[in-house]
Image (cartoon, rainbow, N blue to C red; front, side, top):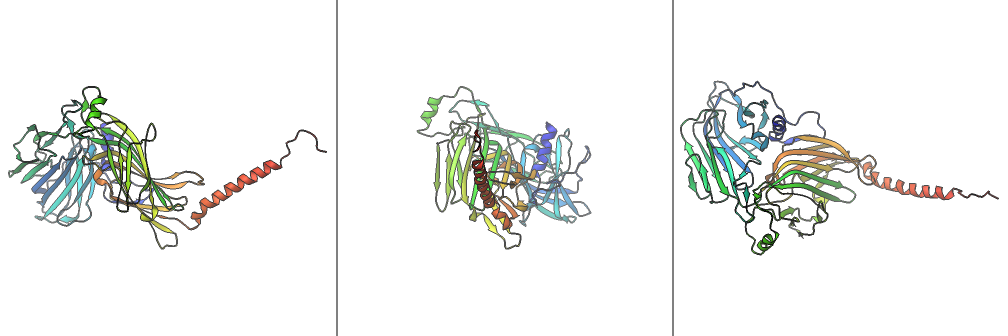
Length: 485
């Protein structure tokens, strides 16, 4: 289990912008297997390092700004970042770029795979080798899912919820760090427990350091904070998102299927419905998920909200020329450890998402968000996202581009009503995604010849004619029992 989880995380974390055919034969990200005793060469040193840890949402967000210096007599372009093996399968959205010169993120890849090693390494490849004694400011950002622990694990229905975050005061590094500082941004000033170090407290911000003495590679200093977070820890184990393109109808149909769970503190007693109903009048803070807010694109129409039982009437849809919003209320409050699965869908005008290219092959460009869904102040994390773009029947030469790291790409056929050979479908899979990925674009280009546009009406015409011919033929049959005169 440990090895399989690591393999899945390796591919999910460290791919840069993806631009490929819809059915590539090669892997989406590279991975180099190195010996078990591998250690990064000490060719860099961290001159100054600042780590920002944001705990305002239900997952951990980290940004590391570090000034690296080449201390080797030769130019170097490979910088290594360590992760513990129990954390790496929960990390997503890893990016590294030059902080002073904003541009595309650098190439990253996992370079060691040893499931029994406590540390795994990620290699960042600089676009140009760094000359000796030269410096570069790296900005490294990522998020970590499902590491915040409710403490206590069980609480009353109206009690406050507290989360425990454990970390190292020293930023894990494969190189010597001359000077560093760590900042924690908490969602509240209610922090009853602080263990390890002597942080400087300014409101809801804790600062550890600066530490001016050189810190050797791999040095760790355990610490933890326990803080109040009376909000749900919303996590979708799986999100299936379908976007269906209809040229004849001029419609873009979207459907999303969620398998949600609340990773917050469990109830220590049975759920009290009377007590819950009483709280609806003054709306106190709660660790239960009571509603979801889904902003949609302006002009969205025909929304629906269903679950395993059927249609859910506790929803509200507001739409105008400037905005559209779908407010969802589950059938029951989702407390810690509880689950809720449902689906939502809506339609939109295809003209706002599709452009036709002036090419002989009938090229088209489709631009849709890779992820939409709920937008909540406490954040939402996704363990796995499966995105399907269902193109018209006859579409070919499909290509795509997205900034979202992917673990799987597949071109398949999806058959619907009155199809002949089925619709070309692009299936994209991502792991360890968060709501900050929301609205990141997905560009899909494909060819749709003029002749393919008439496939559907010709199929319908032939189907209707076949029914009439069959009925006429049956009517001409003589099924009488007596002899003909």
